[in-house]
Picture (cartoon, rainbow, N blue to C red):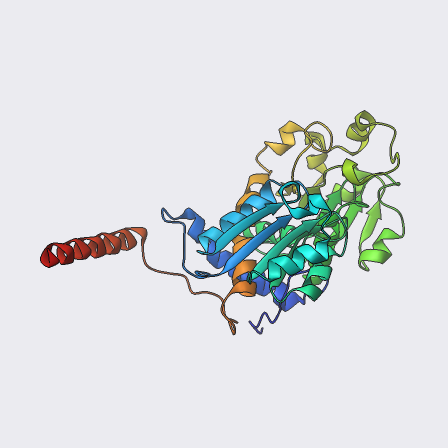
Length: 346
C-alpha cells in the first residue's frame, strides 16, 4: 500500500481512496501516544499557523482541533462568527481572502451551508479542513469513529454497523457511510420514515440497508452508532413529538441483547439523554463515547500534520523513543549550562 497521502485539502470522505483513509488512521495511531505523555507536545508543526473558523456552535470539534494544533507546536487562532466581521456583513469569500492575506498554513472551517469548505479551497492557497458543512459531511468525525472501532475490534472489514436516528440531516451519517463502505463494513440505517427516505441508500452508497425498526438494524450488529436529533436543521415536523421518538427510536438497554455479544455503542455528541439514548446505555460498559473524544485529538493531529506539514511529507511520523524524563533532564542541563555561561561573563 502506498503511504503517499497526496492531498491538499480534506473536504470530505467521499473523495478519499481506501488507501488514503487507512494512511490517515495509521498516522493517527502514531499520535495517540503523545496524549498519554507527561509532556504532550512534539515540534512537528513548529512555525505553522492553523486558523479555526467556526460559524456554528462546537465544543468537541473546535477544542480538539485547537489542542491538536498546539500539541504539534503550531500557532492556533480561533475565530467565531459572533466576533468576526461576518457579523458586520462581510461575505465568506472576503473573510477567506483576508485570512489568506495573513499567510496561514491551514484553515479549519465549520459552516451551516453545505459546500462552504469547497468555496474556501478555491479561494485560498492554505490547506482547508472541513469540520462540518451543513448536512453534507463531517470527515474527521468519521475518521475518529473508524479509529475507535479499529482500536476495539481490530478491523473494519466485515463488521456490521447499525446507524440509528436522524439520517436525513446528519453529516456524520453521510461521512461514516462513505468511509465504512470503502473499508468493507456492512451498514444498516434506521429511523423514522420521514428521516430515512427510501431513496437515501441510492444517494449515499450502494449496499446500505434501510430498516424501519431499530430492532431490525441492531440484530447481530458489531457497532451501534446513535445520532443526535438535528432539530436545528429541521424545517418541518418529521415526527409527532420527542417523547414518541424516544419510545420508538431511542436506544435502551434491552435493545443491546439483539446485537452481537461484544457489540460497542457510539455517539458523535452532543447527546440528548433520554431521547436518542438512555443514560444506562451511554454510561454502560459497552459505550465508547469518551474514547471517541480522545481519538478525536489524535485524528485531528494526523490531519493537520499531513496537510500543514513540510512539503513532501509522505511517510508516517516515527514514534519518538525519547522519554519525558529524558526531555526534562535535557532541558535542565541546558538551563544549568546557560547559568554557568552567565556567571563566567560576569
